[in-house]
Structures are given as structure tokens and as C-alpha cells.
Image (cartoon, rainbow over all chains, first blue to last red; front, side, top):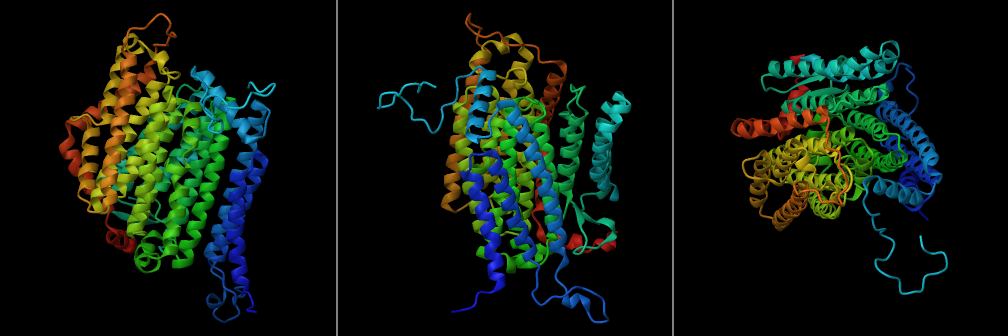
Amino acid sequence: MMPIEVGTVLYAGAIGLVVVGIAGIVLSHHLFRIILALVIAEAGANLLLVLSGFRWEAIAPIITGGDAVQTMVDPVPQAMVLTSIVIGVGVQALALSLTLRAYGAYKTLDIRELQRRMSADLAGEAGTPLPQSLEEPVGGRPLPAAEGDGR
Amino acid sequence: MNTIVLTVVLPLLAAFVVPVLSRVSPLLGRLLGPLTLAYAILLTLQVWLGMEGKPFSIALGGFQPPLGINFYVDRLSLLFTFLTLVTSLLLWPWRNETEPRQYALTLLLAASACGLVLSGDLFNIYVFYELISVASFGLAAATRSGAAFAASLRYLILSGLGSVLVLCGIAIVYLQTGTLNLAQLSQLAPETLNTPLGMSAFALILLGVGVKGELFPVNSWVPEVYAAASSRVSGLLAGLVSKLAVLVIVRLLVLLFQQESALQLMLILGLLGAISGELAAWRAKDMNRMLAFSSIGQLGVIFIAFSIPGKTGLFAGLALSLHHLLVKPALFLLAERWRGSLVGLRGAGLASPVAGGLFVLLALSLVGMPPLPGFWAKFLLFTGLAAQQSVIYQVALGVVLLSIVIEANYLFRVVMNLFQPAGDNSVAVTTDHGWLNLGTTFLLSALLIAGMLLMGPLGAWLEGVAMQAADPVLYFDTVFSVSAIH
């Protein structure tokens, strides 16, 4: 069996984190989970960025008389990752505070419910009929309506 | 020449001073923002006159590129700096006495937009792009209604997904080339990025930046945010921020991704955006939603224009962008008092004939009525598309024509409605537009008419701008002779 290189594992991990995060954003309905999924995806992107300048044989750039530049890792991606982590934290904090506000207004953290109430709000404000839901079939249902189904 | 940096620094500084100053003196707080923007406009004009059409580059902090970050100043980036500042000044939230925070956010948006346009470094562009995002989330939520919070939250999530994609794209570019300086990349790109991996980097960046540019699959935030936010904010987002995203993509296409498949990907997404946006606008029942969907459609057409190879595409795309930047905010301003159902607008044009007349003028230009500037922009697009051999460009030509027909249909339906005598059962519409909104709309329409009268010289000048921007060799030479000019 061929040994698996550490680099391959790390790259696969970074891309995997991004994929897991994106899947979470698309598939979850709970707002807090969606924000956590965003955090995971950002972590994956940051790992990918820091990997792009990493060298396995590198050592810490302590000046000992030798050529430090030849033996250290590329510092540029590390500086960039710091910046992007900071940006990410800021955006996540903003997302949480907006979630609080939205929860205060609609008392729900389910994104589908939130969107339904928001559309109803906007349509009510504009004085137009409610937009047709994409998930509901148009026209009458073939089955007899169950008790209490009239939304 | 270095004063161009102040167009980023001064509004940024003012953005953080405004909230404090407003506590000390509300009057000074209200005046600081517009004064800063006006001064920045003056500075831009000064640089414009000083550069005599020749591009130059500024090494920030004295660190020479490719190690340091540089600002690249050519006619295109100066034009967009100027437009950013002027649009933010025109759409300044004047009426908002109680909210100095909104002043701060508008200033932050202006500063980061100038930085985005001028920057010559990919990661720097990403940082400014994120700053624009944060400012626009705040502005979108500024009406403080439940719907506005929910809409901006959904906008934020989609935008966050976009920035993850951009970061991945940047990581791939860095992995392949080892630099993020656009000038150096433009030299390395033909060898290193002309691969499937390079193409995937472009696709990631296109989708990520496309969130702001209302690109087809990532534009679901548009109708909600524009319906929930105030008209001035909607105008700013639809008119200015979307164009900045397009500008970033165009720079990358010219400098980094010259392969044909990159253009074709953008063309296909633009086609889907144009047709889906116009159809959704045709079905829309209220004013703001209609304008939002039609904005998606027009951005789609702009993406189509920029995907024509060479300077023809750049010229046509620039003309369409400028036209949209002028017309869309004006329509949103008119829509402020006309928000709500389109049926309820019956007779509103008769009640306030000036606003009705302006709406007709703007709608005609948007559709592309011959003497108006909108026609010339679309004419450039058609000649550009028709000159291409490939089948997909011929399909694009048909789709754009179809989208114009749909656009004309729904816009004229609104115009018909505006000028019909009000029936008994119609809702009473507010006819008072307020002198501020009407004045701004009037100014934008006057600019439109002026553009029509000066079409000859304006076209020639814009072609010059496009020629200069379409030249990657010039970009490289300018940035790396920086010490000579410095």
C-alpha cells in the first residue's frame, strides 16, 4: 500500500471543510446551524490559503548567519490568513447580531419560516397578493384537505 | 498625483469621526460627510487633469511592487472613483437626522469602493470587497423593520458563501503563481493560469464576486433587499455596488484569464441572468420588485457585453454600465413614493406630471429608444455580438433582443397605468415626491439628456478609456516603471 502524504491529507481536509460548510449552508434550515456552517467553510478556505505557501522542509527564520530566506515558509499567505480570519470573525458577529434582530421581529430561527413571514410582510406593505410558494403545487390538490390544513 | 490615495483615506477617516462628531455637534456631523465627498471629487478631478490620459502607479508606503501593494490609476479606475464619489453624494441619506450611523456606513462604502477600483493587488481587492459588503449589510438593514433584518441576514449568508469561494479562488491563483500582484500575474498568467485549475479559480472568483454583481445563480437576495431597504440604498446597491463587482471581474479577465472558456462561462451565466431577470420582472406585481428583477436582467446584459473578446466588449460593457448607473438610481428614487402594487399606481402620473414624465424618459432610455443614450449602448452591444463567429454569440444576440421586448412590455404597461385616469376603486397614491428626490432624479435625467446631445465626443472618449483598459502590457509596464515616476 502506498503511504499517503501529509500534504494530500491537508489539501483534502481543506477542500472537504469547504464542501461540508457549503452543504451545511444549503441544506440546514436552522439559522444558527447555517452560520456555523459558514464558519466551517471559512476555516476550510483559510486552511487552503495557508497551505498555498507552506513548505515542509522549512524551519523558523532565526538569523544564525545562514540564509534564512531559503529555509523559511512563504510569509505572505500567513499574513493574508490573519486578515481573512479577522474579517471572518467580524462578519460572523454581524450575522449573529442580525439573527438576534430577525428573531426579535419574527420569533423564529427557521430560515424557511423566516422567509415566508418576510415575504408576507413585504407583500402586505406593498398591497400585492402573496407570492406563490415554489414548493406548493399550483391549483387544487387531488387529495381531500386534512383538518386544519387551511393556512 | 499621490493625492488620489486621499479619496480612500479621507472618507474612511470621516466614517469613523462622524458618529463621535454628531454627539458633539449634530450640524457638523451632518455636514462632514458631504463635504468630505465633495473634496474627494475635487481631488479626483485634479488628478484627472494632471495625468493627461497616461496611467501611473503608486507604491503605497514606498514598498515597490511586487512586494508592496500598489494603486493603479488609469482612466478607467479614475472614472469609477469619480462615479463612486458622485453617486454616494447624490444618494446621500439627507433625510436621516437621527442616524449618524448611516452617514458612517455610506462613507465607509464610498472609501472602500474607491480602494477596490484603484487597488492593484488581488488580496487587497478582496479586503476592500469585504468592507463594501459589511457597509452594504448595514445600509440594507438601516430601515430597522423586521423584513429588512431578515433580508439583510439572507444577503449576508449568501455573501459570506461568496467570499469563501473568492478566498478559494485566490488560494488557487497563489498556489499556481506565487504572487497576487495583478501586474506580475498578468505576465505569469499565460503560462500558469491557462489550465483547468486556473479556469476553476476564475469560476470560483466569478461566482463569489458575482454575488454583489447580481450574477445569475447567486442573486436571490436582490428582490428581498431592494424591497425592504430604502430607495436611496437600493439605488446605491443596484447602481454602484453591482458595477464595482463587474469591474473587478473585467480587470481579472483582461489581466489574468484570457482563455476563451472563461469568457464563455460568463456569457452563459449572463444569458441566464438576462432572461430570468426580465421574465421575473414581467411577472412582478409591485414597483420595487419589478425594478429589482429588471436590474438583474440588465446586469445579465452587461455581463454578456463584457464577455465579447477584445476592446469591443469592453467598450460596449462600459457604455451599458454607465447608462445603467445613471438610470437605475433615478428610477428607484421615483419609486420611493410609488412603492407598492403597480395596479395601485393608476393615475399617479396624471397627479404628478413631472415625475410621470421623468419616468417615461428613463423607461424609454432603458429600453433603448433611438436618440437616447440607452440606444447607443445597446447598438454597440449588437454590433459587437454580430461580429463574432461563434454560434453562442448569435444565440446571445437573440436572447438580448428577446429581453428588450419583454422589458418594453412591462415598462410600458407601467407607463400606461400611470397615465390612465384613476378609477373609483384605485388606492389613493401619494403624489408628493419631495423636492429632494425629484431634484436628484431631475439632475440624473438632465445628465442623460446631456449625454444624448454630446454622444459623439462622449463615445470617442469612452472608446479611449476602453482601449487603455484592454491593454495588459501597458498595465505591466506602468506598474514596474513605478520608481521612475515616483
